Image 1: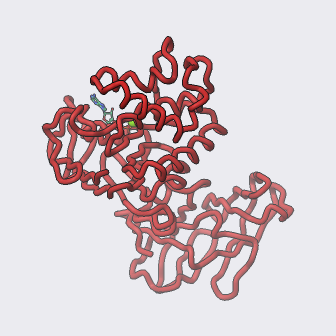
Image 2: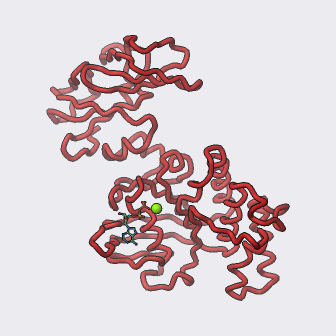
Image 3: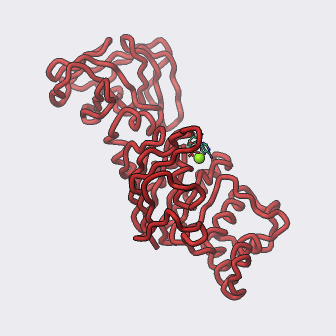
Length: 352
Ligand SMILES: Nc1ncnc2c1ncn2[C@@H]1O[C@H](COP(=O)(O)OP(=O)(O)O)[C@@H](O)[C@H]1O
Ligand SMILES: [Mg+2]
């Protein structure tokens, strides 16, 4: 088992692409850390440097207390699972899992024990004799993970391992992976562009943008106290409402409504951030509310989303699914003032 630390790590590719920009991140022993951000933000590059598949331009990476910058990949005691987990089609599940160990000259009895242990954890026991084509997508994914597990690495690196699965299977495998993480007592670093995967799986989430780490915190903390507008907008669906306001003392004035802030933020303007679920059909005394001109209604059974306009601003609200609303209606919405955010107009950093 091992911790991992990135210390001021930068990766510059030829042609001057700054893929990872001065990354400092500590992953604790046995932690499930998720790196999340849109395509191209440097997630895979960060993982590949840790695995030894890319050189580090500046800074250092440690596994445990060993600096691994110049250590060959095979000595790093890491196993990586990719999105495209090519299994050998002509080999059985057993042989697919055993192959890497055979290549390394691991004794036969040892291979057998490790493959059977992994098969037990992954519930692949009854499938060991099958060929990949006789497996479902989720089962193949488990075999790919099995190949990593039999190596008994200190750290598992997973790069978008669920991206090729359909929606339902993705949810099942997500839960599966969390169980396996617990069973293995190993450190997991998991890369995804999917904020739902990040929120549901991570002990902590590291949000990246353009090679720069934006915030590292447990999911709840990231959701409730995003450090800036980027994090606030990336995490959560439908996305947080952002509304430009002028501020006078504690009064925030948007184009179509006014709100009393819990305290004076000490700025004259800002961007108000309100999550859709912080808006509801209950008006509240003393804080003001807003009148939504509803344009689109989405009923999802457990939720109802209203998309509309207040003054000059587009607003999304999540209301009680039992509320009868039609496009064209005006709905008076209250704001949960404990869940209000205010961001600086220039720096986009959270002010409250
Ligand atoms: N081998 C490479 N050569 C040049 N540029 C690369 C290479 N690999 C990745 N990049 C660039 O580095 C940036 C980060 O890429 P990547 O780490 O793959 O992002 P992510 O995994 O978050 O989608 C992108 O701009 C990408 O085009
Ligand atoms: Mg990637």
